[in-house]
Length: 412
Image 1 (cartoon, rainbow, N blue to C red):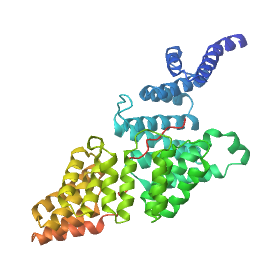
Image 2 (cartoon, rainbow, N blue to C red):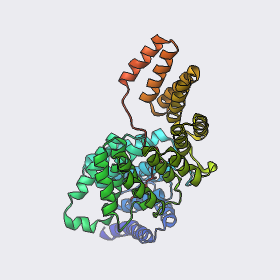
Image 3 (tube, helix red, strand yellow):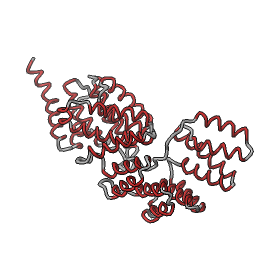
Image 4 (spheres, rainbow, N blue to C red):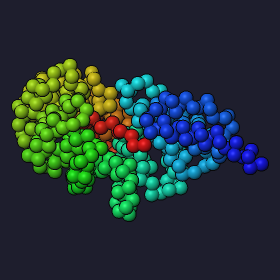
Protein backbone atom coordinates (compact mmCIF):
# COMPACT_ATOMS: atom_id res chain seq x y z
CA UNK A 1 0.00 0.00 0.00
CA UNK A 2 2.86 2.34 0.86
CA UNK A 3 4.46 1.71 -2.52
CA UNK A 4 1.20 2.57 -4.32
CA UNK A 5 0.93 5.86 -2.41
CA UNK A 6 4.53 6.75 -3.25
CA UNK A 7 3.93 6.03 -6.94
CA UNK A 8 0.71 8.09 -6.89
CA UNK A 9 2.46 11.14 -5.42
CA UNK A 10 5.68 10.93 -7.40
CA UNK A 11 4.31 12.45 -10.60
CA UNK A 12 2.62 15.54 -9.02
CA UNK A 13 5.74 16.17 -6.92
CA UNK A 14 7.99 15.87 -9.95
CA UNK A 15 5.73 18.22 -11.95
CA UNK A 16 5.80 20.78 -9.14
CA UNK A 17 9.60 20.62 -8.84
CA UNK A 18 9.94 20.98 -12.62
CA UNK A 19 7.64 24.03 -12.58
CA UNK A 20 9.69 25.59 -9.77
CA UNK A 21 12.92 25.14 -11.71
CA UNK A 22 11.31 26.79 -14.76
CA UNK A 23 10.00 29.65 -12.62
CA UNK A 24 13.56 30.53 -11.61
CA UNK A 25 14.16 31.28 -15.32
CA UNK A 26 10.75 33.01 -15.73
CA UNK A 27 9.93 30.38 -18.37
CA UNK A 28 6.21 31.14 -18.22
CA UNK A 29 5.29 29.55 -21.55
CA UNK A 30 6.90 26.28 -20.57
CA UNK A 31 5.18 26.25 -17.18
CA UNK A 32 1.83 27.08 -18.78
CA UNK A 33 2.28 24.16 -21.16
CA UNK A 34 2.19 21.86 -18.12
CA UNK A 35 -1.57 22.48 -17.91
CA UNK A 36 -2.10 19.36 -20.02
CA UNK A 37 -0.23 17.31 -17.43
CA UNK A 38 -2.77 18.16 -14.71
CA UNK A 39 -5.66 15.70 -14.26
CA UNK A 40 -9.26 16.89 -14.76
CA UNK A 41 -10.03 16.02 -11.13
CA UNK A 42 -7.40 17.54 -8.87
CA UNK A 43 -6.59 16.19 -5.41
CA UNK A 44 -4.33 17.66 -2.74
CA UNK A 45 -1.18 16.10 -4.21
CA UNK A 46 -1.64 18.12 -7.42
CA UNK A 47 -2.34 21.50 -5.79
CA UNK A 48 1.27 22.80 -5.56
CA UNK A 49 1.80 22.16 -9.28
CA UNK A 50 -1.60 23.68 -10.13
CA UNK A 51 -0.71 26.84 -8.20
CA UNK A 52 2.53 27.22 -10.18
CA UNK A 53 0.78 26.72 -13.51
CA UNK A 54 -1.95 29.23 -12.59
CA UNK A 55 0.64 31.86 -11.73
CA UNK A 56 2.43 31.33 -15.05
CA UNK A 57 -0.85 31.66 -16.95
CA UNK A 58 -1.43 34.99 -15.23
CA UNK A 59 2.05 36.20 -16.16
CA UNK A 60 1.16 35.50 -19.79
CA UNK A 61 -2.07 37.49 -19.51
CA UNK A 62 -4.21 34.35 -19.66
CA UNK A 63 -6.14 35.36 -16.58
CA UNK A 64 -9.35 33.53 -17.38
CA UNK A 65 -7.50 30.20 -17.58
CA UNK A 66 -5.57 31.00 -14.39
CA UNK A 67 -8.79 31.80 -12.52
CA UNK A 68 -10.49 28.63 -13.74
CA UNK A 69 -7.56 26.51 -12.56
CA UNK A 70 -7.41 28.26 -9.18
CA UNK A 71 -11.15 27.76 -8.69
CA UNK A 72 -10.65 24.04 -9.30
CA UNK A 73 -7.85 24.04 -6.73
CA UNK A 74 -9.98 26.04 -4.26
CA UNK A 75 -12.75 23.45 -4.54
CA UNK A 76 -10.27 20.88 -3.21
CA UNK A 77 -8.69 23.05 -0.54
CA UNK A 78 -9.58 26.64 0.19
CA UNK A 79 -6.85 28.71 1.86
CA UNK A 80 -5.62 32.30 2.16
CA UNK A 81 -2.97 31.67 -0.45
CA UNK A 82 -5.51 30.70 -3.11
CA UNK A 83 -7.98 33.43 -2.19
CA UNK A 84 -5.12 35.92 -2.49
CA UNK A 85 -4.05 34.39 -5.82
CA UNK A 86 -7.60 34.66 -7.17
CA UNK A 87 -7.78 38.30 -6.06
CA UNK A 88 -4.42 38.92 -7.73
CA UNK A 89 -5.53 37.37 -11.04
CA UNK A 90 -8.66 39.55 -11.13
CA UNK A 91 -6.58 42.58 -10.13
CA UNK A 92 -3.93 41.98 -12.79
CA UNK A 93 -6.65 41.40 -15.39
CA UNK A 94 -8.39 44.66 -14.46
CA UNK A 95 -5.11 46.57 -14.60
CA UNK A 96 -4.26 45.05 -17.99
CA UNK A 97 -7.59 46.24 -19.38
CA UNK A 98 -6.55 49.78 -18.48
CA UNK A 99 -3.45 49.44 -20.64
CA UNK A 100 -4.83 48.44 -24.05
CA UNK A 101 -1.55 49.32 -25.74
CA UNK A 102 0.19 46.33 -24.15
CA UNK A 103 -1.36 43.48 -26.12
CA UNK A 104 -4.97 42.57 -26.68
CA UNK A 105 -6.43 41.69 -23.31
CA UNK A 106 -10.18 41.16 -23.29
CA UNK A 107 -12.70 40.65 -20.51
CA UNK A 108 -15.91 41.92 -19.00
CA UNK A 109 -14.95 44.72 -16.62
CA UNK A 110 -17.91 44.31 -14.28
CA UNK A 111 -17.40 40.55 -13.93
CA UNK A 112 -13.71 41.11 -13.23
CA UNK A 113 -14.47 43.86 -10.72
CA UNK A 114 -16.92 41.65 -8.83
CA UNK A 115 -14.46 38.76 -8.90
CA UNK A 116 -11.76 40.91 -7.36
CA UNK A 117 -14.13 42.17 -4.68
CA UNK A 118 -15.22 38.61 -3.87
CA UNK A 119 -11.72 37.22 -3.44
CA UNK A 120 -9.95 40.20 -1.87
CA UNK A 121 -12.64 40.19 0.83
CA UNK A 122 -12.01 36.49 1.44
CA UNK A 123 -8.23 36.92 1.44
CA UNK A 124 -8.37 39.77 3.97
CA UNK A 125 -10.87 37.85 6.10
CA UNK A 126 -8.37 35.02 6.36
CA UNK A 127 -5.34 37.28 6.78
CA UNK A 128 -6.25 40.91 7.63
CA UNK A 129 -2.58 41.93 7.86
CA UNK A 130 -1.62 40.78 4.35
CA UNK A 131 0.53 43.63 3.02
CA UNK A 132 0.24 42.59 -0.62
CA UNK A 133 -3.54 42.17 -0.48
CA UNK A 134 -3.99 45.56 1.20
CA UNK A 135 -1.73 47.18 -1.39
CA UNK A 136 -3.65 45.67 -4.28
CA UNK A 137 -6.96 46.73 -2.75
CA UNK A 138 -5.65 50.30 -2.46
CA UNK A 139 -4.42 50.47 -6.05
CA UNK A 140 -7.66 48.88 -7.30
CA UNK A 141 -9.72 51.53 -5.48
CA UNK A 142 -7.57 54.37 -6.82
CA UNK A 143 -7.11 53.25 -10.42
CA UNK A 144 -9.76 50.73 -11.42
CA UNK A 145 -12.62 52.23 -9.42
CA UNK A 146 -12.08 55.76 -10.78
CA UNK A 147 -10.33 57.41 -7.86
CA UNK A 148 -12.01 55.98 -4.79
CA UNK A 149 -9.14 57.69 -2.99
CA UNK A 150 -10.54 57.68 0.55
CA UNK A 151 -10.93 53.88 0.47
CA UNK A 152 -7.61 53.54 -1.36
CA UNK A 153 -5.77 55.59 1.24
CA UNK A 154 -7.21 53.53 4.11
CA UNK A 155 -6.02 50.26 2.56
CA UNK A 156 -2.61 51.62 1.59
CA UNK A 157 -1.96 53.13 5.03
CA UNK A 158 -2.79 49.75 6.59
CA UNK A 159 -0.29 48.08 4.25
CA UNK A 160 2.36 50.63 5.25
CA UNK A 161 1.54 50.23 8.94
CA UNK A 162 1.78 46.43 8.82
CA UNK A 163 5.11 46.57 6.97
CA UNK A 164 6.61 49.03 9.46
CA UNK A 165 5.36 46.79 12.27
CA UNK A 166 7.20 43.71 11.00
CA UNK A 167 10.12 42.42 13.10
CA UNK A 168 13.45 43.79 11.84
CA UNK A 169 14.67 40.37 10.73
CA UNK A 170 11.59 39.69 8.64
CA UNK A 171 11.76 43.11 6.96
CA UNK A 172 15.37 42.41 5.99
CA UNK A 173 14.52 38.93 4.71
CA UNK A 174 11.38 39.87 2.74
CA UNK A 175 12.64 42.03 -0.10
CA UNK A 176 9.38 41.35 -1.95
CA UNK A 177 7.44 43.07 0.84
CA UNK A 178 9.81 46.04 0.85
CA UNK A 179 9.03 46.58 -2.82
CA UNK A 180 5.30 46.54 -2.04
CA UNK A 181 5.86 48.96 0.86
CA UNK A 182 7.71 51.47 -1.33
CA UNK A 183 5.06 51.33 -4.02
CA UNK A 184 2.40 51.72 -1.31
CA UNK A 185 4.11 54.92 -0.13
CA UNK A 186 3.88 56.32 -3.65
CA UNK A 187 0.28 55.26 -4.21
CA UNK A 188 -0.82 56.53 -0.79
CA UNK A 189 0.85 59.90 -1.43
CA UNK A 190 -0.97 60.16 -4.76
CA UNK A 191 -4.37 59.46 -3.18
CA UNK A 192 -3.68 61.78 -0.24
CA UNK A 193 -2.84 64.59 -2.65
CA UNK A 194 -6.03 64.07 -4.62
CA UNK A 195 -7.97 64.17 -1.34
CA UNK A 196 -6.38 67.51 -0.47
CA UNK A 197 -4.35 66.06 2.41
CA UNK A 198 -1.22 67.85 1.32
CA UNK A 199 0.84 67.43 4.53
CA UNK A 200 0.30 63.67 4.51
CA UNK A 201 1.03 63.52 0.77
CA UNK A 202 4.28 65.42 1.34
CA UNK A 203 5.36 63.07 4.15
CA UNK A 204 4.61 59.93 2.11
CA UNK A 205 6.05 61.23 -1.15
CA UNK A 206 9.32 62.31 0.43
CA UNK A 207 9.54 59.02 2.35
CA UNK A 208 9.19 57.14 -0.94
CA UNK A 209 12.00 59.17 -2.54
CA UNK A 210 14.26 58.76 0.48
CA UNK A 211 13.72 55.05 1.10
CA UNK A 212 13.59 54.01 -2.57
CA UNK A 213 16.74 55.92 -3.51
CA UNK A 214 18.91 52.84 -3.99
CA UNK A 215 16.35 50.49 -5.54
CA UNK A 216 14.06 52.65 -7.70
CA UNK A 217 11.13 50.25 -7.42
CA UNK A 218 9.10 53.34 -8.35
CA UNK A 219 10.60 55.03 -11.41
CA UNK A 220 12.41 58.28 -10.45
CA UNK A 221 10.45 60.25 -13.02
CA UNK A 222 7.21 59.28 -11.26
CA UNK A 223 8.53 59.92 -7.74
CA UNK A 224 9.84 63.35 -8.69
CA UNK A 225 6.70 64.25 -10.62
CA UNK A 226 4.53 63.46 -7.62
CA UNK A 227 6.86 65.38 -5.28
CA UNK A 228 6.66 68.37 -7.61
CA UNK A 229 2.86 68.15 -7.55
CA UNK A 230 2.89 68.04 -3.76
CA UNK A 231 5.19 71.07 -3.57
CA UNK A 232 2.96 72.93 -6.01
CA UNK A 233 -0.08 72.17 -3.85
CA UNK A 234 1.74 73.40 -0.73
CA UNK A 235 2.90 76.61 -2.43
CA UNK A 236 6.58 75.64 -2.53
CA UNK A 237 6.99 76.78 -6.12
CA UNK A 238 10.80 76.79 -6.27
CA UNK A 239 10.95 73.22 -4.97
CA UNK A 240 8.16 72.21 -7.35
CA UNK A 241 9.98 73.59 -10.38
CA UNK A 242 13.28 72.04 -9.32
CA UNK A 243 11.68 68.60 -8.89
CA UNK A 244 9.89 68.86 -12.24
CA UNK A 245 13.09 69.86 -14.05
CA UNK A 246 15.04 66.98 -12.47
CA UNK A 247 12.19 64.61 -13.35
CA UNK A 248 12.68 65.47 -17.04
CA UNK A 249 16.03 63.66 -16.89
CA UNK A 250 15.02 60.99 -14.38
CA UNK A 251 14.98 57.29 -15.16
CA UNK A 252 11.67 55.86 -16.27
CA UNK A 253 9.33 55.74 -19.27
CA UNK A 254 10.43 57.95 -22.13
CA UNK A 255 7.12 59.77 -22.37
CA UNK A 256 7.60 63.07 -20.50
CA UNK A 257 5.23 65.57 -22.11
CA UNK A 258 3.02 65.77 -19.02
CA UNK A 259 5.96 67.29 -17.12
CA UNK A 260 5.80 70.34 -19.37
CA UNK A 261 2.15 70.63 -18.39
CA UNK A 262 3.24 70.61 -14.75
CA UNK A 263 5.85 73.31 -15.41
CA UNK A 264 3.11 75.31 -17.12
CA UNK A 265 0.96 74.97 -13.98
CA UNK A 266 3.84 76.23 -11.85
CA UNK A 267 4.33 79.23 -14.12
CA UNK A 268 0.63 80.05 -13.85
CA UNK A 269 0.89 79.94 -10.06
CA UNK A 270 3.62 82.56 -10.42
CA UNK A 271 1.23 84.65 -12.56
CA UNK A 272 3.57 84.24 -15.53
CA UNK A 273 1.11 83.34 -18.29
CA UNK A 274 3.60 83.83 -21.12
CA UNK A 275 6.00 81.30 -19.56
CA UNK A 276 3.06 78.92 -19.00
CA UNK A 277 2.24 79.09 -22.72
CA UNK A 278 5.90 78.68 -23.70
CA UNK A 279 6.47 75.50 -21.66
CA UNK A 280 3.90 73.69 -23.80
CA UNK A 281 4.18 75.54 -27.11
CA UNK A 282 7.97 75.25 -27.23
CA UNK A 283 8.44 71.70 -26.00
CA UNK A 284 5.38 69.71 -27.09
CA UNK A 285 4.35 69.81 -30.77
CA UNK A 286 0.58 69.92 -31.42
CA UNK A 287 0.33 66.34 -32.67
CA UNK A 288 1.75 65.06 -29.35
CA UNK A 289 -0.49 67.07 -27.05
CA UNK A 290 -3.10 65.08 -25.20
CA UNK A 291 -6.33 66.54 -23.88
CA UNK A 292 -4.74 67.54 -20.57
CA UNK A 293 -2.01 69.56 -22.29
CA UNK A 294 -4.48 71.29 -24.60
CA UNK A 295 -6.58 72.12 -21.55
CA UNK A 296 -3.56 73.59 -19.75
CA UNK A 297 -2.56 75.56 -22.83
CA UNK A 298 -6.07 77.01 -22.95
CA UNK A 299 -5.74 78.00 -19.28
CA UNK A 300 -2.46 79.76 -20.00
CA UNK A 301 -3.88 81.63 -23.01
CA UNK A 302 -6.89 82.72 -20.98
CA UNK A 303 -4.65 84.04 -18.19
CA UNK A 304 -2.69 85.90 -20.88
CA UNK A 305 -5.94 87.55 -21.99
CA UNK A 306 -6.27 85.71 -25.31
CA UNK A 307 -9.81 84.28 -25.17
CA UNK A 308 -9.77 83.21 -28.83
CA UNK A 309 -6.67 81.03 -28.46
CA UNK A 310 -7.97 79.69 -25.16
CA UNK A 311 -11.22 78.56 -26.80
CA UNK A 312 -9.29 77.02 -29.71
CA UNK A 313 -7.07 75.04 -27.32
CA UNK A 314 -10.07 73.80 -25.35
CA UNK A 315 -11.81 72.75 -28.57
CA UNK A 316 -8.73 70.68 -29.39
CA UNK A 317 -8.89 69.15 -25.92
CA UNK A 318 -12.48 68.04 -26.55
CA UNK A 319 -11.45 66.31 -29.78
CA UNK A 320 -9.01 64.07 -27.89
CA UNK A 321 -10.64 63.66 -24.49
CA UNK A 322 -12.50 60.63 -23.18
CA UNK A 323 -12.18 60.96 -19.41
CA UNK A 324 -12.03 64.67 -18.61
CA UNK A 325 -14.46 66.29 -21.00
CA UNK A 326 -16.37 67.89 -18.12
CA UNK A 327 -13.21 69.75 -17.06
CA UNK A 328 -12.88 71.32 -20.51
CA UNK A 329 -16.59 71.99 -20.94
CA UNK A 330 -16.71 73.88 -17.63
CA UNK A 331 -13.88 76.12 -18.82
CA UNK A 332 -15.68 76.81 -22.08
CA UNK A 333 -18.91 77.49 -20.23
CA UNK A 334 -17.22 80.04 -17.98
CA UNK A 335 -15.66 81.75 -20.99
CA UNK A 336 -19.03 81.95 -22.80
CA UNK A 337 -20.64 83.40 -19.66
CA UNK A 338 -18.03 86.13 -19.52
CA UNK A 339 -18.65 86.90 -23.20
CA UNK A 340 -22.42 87.01 -22.72
CA UNK A 341 -23.02 83.96 -24.93
CA UNK A 342 -25.60 82.56 -22.55
CA UNK A 343 -27.03 79.85 -24.81
CA UNK A 344 -23.58 78.43 -25.56
CA UNK A 345 -22.66 78.66 -21.86
CA UNK A 346 -25.76 76.74 -20.83
CA UNK A 347 -25.08 74.08 -23.46
CA UNK A 348 -21.45 73.65 -22.34
CA UNK A 349 -22.33 73.39 -18.65
CA UNK A 350 -25.21 71.00 -19.33
CA UNK A 351 -22.92 68.73 -21.37
CA UNK A 352 -20.37 68.81 -18.55
CA UNK A 353 -23.02 67.81 -16.00
CA UNK A 354 -24.33 65.01 -18.19
CA UNK A 355 -20.87 63.67 -19.04
CA UNK A 356 -19.71 63.53 -15.42
CA UNK A 357 -22.93 61.85 -14.32
CA UNK A 358 -22.81 59.19 -17.04
CA UNK A 359 -19.06 58.56 -16.86
CA UNK A 360 -18.42 58.77 -13.12
CA UNK A 361 -21.95 58.43 -11.69
CA UNK A 362 -21.55 61.60 -9.67
CA UNK A 363 -22.24 65.31 -10.03
CA UNK A 364 -19.49 67.82 -10.76
CA UNK A 365 -20.08 70.80 -8.41
CA UNK A 366 -18.38 73.24 -10.78
CA UNK A 367 -20.49 72.17 -13.71
CA UNK A 368 -23.68 72.41 -11.65
CA UNK A 369 -22.72 75.84 -10.29
CA UNK A 370 -22.01 77.11 -13.79
CA UNK A 371 -25.24 75.69 -15.15
CA UNK A 372 -27.16 77.37 -12.33
CA UNK A 373 -25.60 80.75 -13.18
CA UNK A 374 -26.29 80.32 -16.90
CA UNK A 375 -29.93 79.37 -16.27
CA UNK A 376 -30.43 82.30 -13.90
CA UNK A 377 -28.94 84.69 -16.46
CA UNK A 378 -31.32 83.35 -19.09
CA UNK A 379 -34.34 83.91 -16.87
CA UNK A 380 -34.95 80.21 -16.16
CA UNK A 381 -35.31 80.75 -12.43
CA UNK A 382 -37.28 77.59 -11.60
CA UNK A 383 -34.76 75.28 -13.29
CA UNK A 384 -31.88 77.27 -11.75
CA UNK A 385 -33.37 76.62 -8.30
CA UNK A 386 -33.54 72.88 -9.01
CA UNK A 387 -29.90 72.86 -10.10
CA UNK A 388 -28.83 74.77 -6.97
CA UNK A 389 -30.67 72.23 -4.81
CA UNK A 390 -28.79 69.47 -6.63
CA UNK A 391 -25.54 71.38 -6.12
CA UNK A 392 -26.13 71.50 -2.36
CA UNK A 393 -26.07 67.68 -2.31
CA UNK A 394 -23.01 67.28 -4.54
CA UNK A 395 -19.78 66.26 -2.85
CA UNK A 396 -16.72 68.42 -3.58
CA UNK A 397 -14.12 66.55 -5.60
CA UNK A 398 -10.53 67.43 -6.45
CA UNK A 399 -10.00 66.75 -10.14
CA UNK A 400 -7.10 69.14 -10.54
CA UNK A 401 -4.44 66.41 -10.59
CA UNK A 402 -4.92 65.80 -14.28
CA UNK A 403 -1.58 64.28 -15.24
CA UNK A 404 -1.54 60.62 -16.32
CA UNK A 405 -1.42 58.18 -13.42
CA UNK A 406 1.57 55.88 -13.44
CA UNK A 407 0.42 52.44 -14.63
CA UNK A 408 0.93 50.04 -11.76
CA UNK A 409 3.79 47.57 -12.11
CA UNK A 410 2.49 44.45 -10.40
CA UNK A 411 4.33 42.87 -7.54
CA UNK A 412 3.95 39.11 -7.55
